[in-house]
Length: 396
Image (cartoon, rainbow, N blue to C red; front, side, top):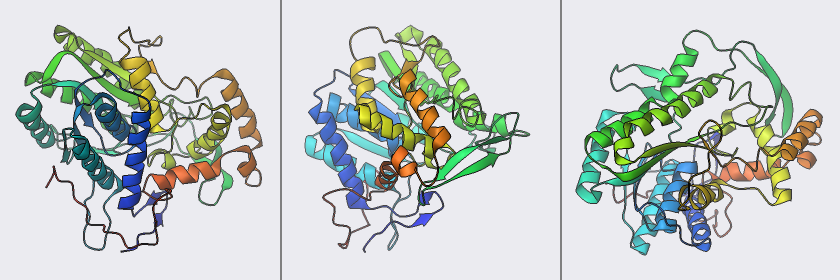
């Protein structure tokens, strides 16, 4: 079939397998070009199919020759209907690891569930024995709690007052004001249950109980802080409460694995185009302004560049990992430099539908968005018939 992007709101409902494969190949080539990293050799990535999770799996495998297990929840293809992009990403990743002679297996299912945790435990016992590094990179908006059976849904809302600010429809380029009503009822609690640190700790506890964590084990979860322009709806909103909980959980996990000299870290990463961030009001406008400035300075990074720098300059240097005053790894440092943020504030005040193409990099935002679904890559002929029925060998 010939596959074209089909939009429904802020989501693309199709994915191109060849484009996703090209995306994976491009990231692998970048990691190879940067040289070897003396990193962990047995790696579990929870949320491994897109974004920072996929970049982490690629960096571990092709930067450190690591054996990797990836856990994700992706939609497989059916006749005449494409899989989700994460499915094609993972299939392409496993094809490349097979060529390179690297171990890679995947588990597709609800990572919040006890069943998927047990499948992962069984696979580690069978194939790897123990794990040296766990990357926790889940971005699901919904979680069915494995103990209570209650399904919780996260919300993206400010706390206290209605939030009004600029946003942009990145498809049309229209800049407009948007108002978001404040959280109410159980909104904060539900968001913390879904996006906080409880499930991360459940994973580490389950692995530890089965003696699957190596001495000196490390685990990292990803977070975001962002600028003062977005803090009311993000860091000081319901999601911010979940991030606070995640960051506090890192200390709990570290305490629970100190007998094996283990450490848990939260890495604060930069703003990037993801499926999740595209649906957050104000974020697309902020990112388009940010991209323009950072590209001009030569400091712009995508997911793979961010994670390569995290691995090579923070996690695996052989030296003490630099942390901020709250014990977090900061890889958002280039984004939050004072001069970048001051310039964004000035541009933000002046941004309109008419001038955004000059003030910001909206085209770069759109390209990155379509890249998420395998569209817009050089070297891929999108006019050709494509086989959408691509499977992942280690799952089936």
